[in-house]
Length: 182
Image (cartoon, rainbow, N blue to C red; front, side, top):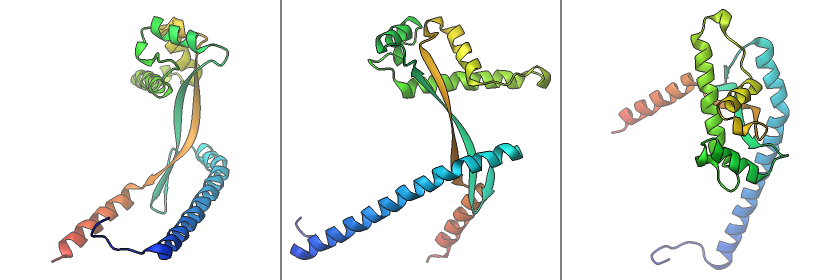
């Protein structure tokens, strides 16, 4: 590297080894934190369910349960069957050698959103409680070729984002700091 001067020889090797060890220690801490967070998930989800709330802001963060839908092939059916069923259903864009799970899941989520919007338009007393089996039934009604081949599972995760108030305070501080500089 012409023009750049830095540590050389054993000093560079020693610095590299120290930084590598530090990185490994941080990665170990992150893995430990992931396990601790996973252990807390049932308690956090239980709190939301017990109190009938969909989010809680605390310490500058907003914590909320997040439902995620995933599409997959029934494990008792072959990739070839899934491929053929997707093509027959007119869903050729999802029919790769092994089903494109991300794209197919996005398609399933679009239908889920559509169904939720349709229910929201109905008078409250006529609204149904939608669940994954209802969604699967709607998809197979639209695409009978997928019946018994497509599976949908719901994962409940916890989402943590910077709360709106905290984010706004951060932006105000940034503006004030920018205006204070000469």
